[in-house]
Length: 104
Image (cartoon, rainbow, N blue to C red):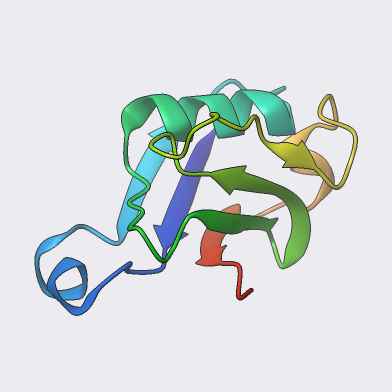
């Protein structure tokens, strides 16, 4: 299944230079955890010293919060829904995923 992932820029330079969307090809029975692991492993998400956590929404539904890998100690994602939930459960046709910064 093709999933379009969008992310918020972490700075004005990132907004100009960095890709803010990327397509992922994942298995049809992909779980929320598998989706997050694929996005994190691709290093698509960008963080800064002031922007260290992002909410992940699938088809407008918040499913998890992910953290910068540069913050010590490294934090694992916090799942809002069961990590084994299939991504397809949230949308049948268009699978858009969005990562936006958490405001402290």
